[in-house]
Image (cartoon, rainbow, N blue to C red):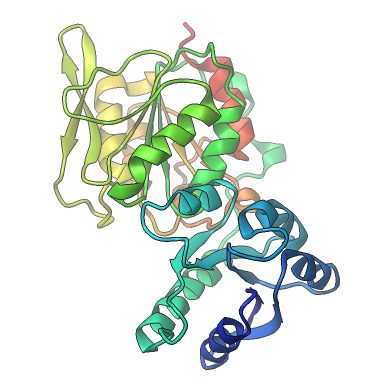
Length: 342
């Protein structure tokens, strides 16, 4: 059974969450504490699979303590369960950017009903399933393809989902501000997050970041992210390339989906493109990765060890579609080295 540590200053919330978790058939609460300090002490003595973290805590708040809890957890996934973690909330994006695996809005006292219990079990199951991949990575970091064999490229297309914001942060920080290659990003997030998400990436990446709009030109040195309402595709526009948003059904069922973006980039840029698949649940991007590979473009995927969930990158690697399997910061250094050359 997967072991759970609850970090919440409310004794009522700890008891309610504990009853819900212990009522499941695959999860067990092994600790329940009221502060970040107590959680760090617990993790110094015990290993757990998942940490449930409230954000509003006495002393060190949940956001401030999140990086230390991730480090102390030694691979434990953090699920933020907080009333401050609503759709579009600044705290939600901050938690995901700091490495939280997922978020769930905590109901008011008295609101811990059957519907919330089902949502909680579903979130825990996703994290537990994602933390136990069926196969090892295609390549390890030590045996990754040497950087020179990847070749130059004129555009980077990145797909990500659960855990992807933290990986994107590491990747973008490794790219110097003077790297001119344009970067497209499809990250699975609700539409209400996108404006704040763009502002966060602009700050982290040290380059302008726009939420994609129809007919927007793709320009050097900028990041363009898919909106929550459409797939980020490209089309020729005069002597350049412009955004073309689509809303058709994708094989993954996601909106936005990574697959249409990869397909579009493969058609326009061929071998002069680079595809990247970061941490995420499911298989979105695996179909588009085949299109990129068929066009001669390299596809890099995040390694299992640094992924919150090795579903999306694992699907590409296990299908033989990964040129290399690397931590996100190494992918960023590769982009800095080869983007726009030749």
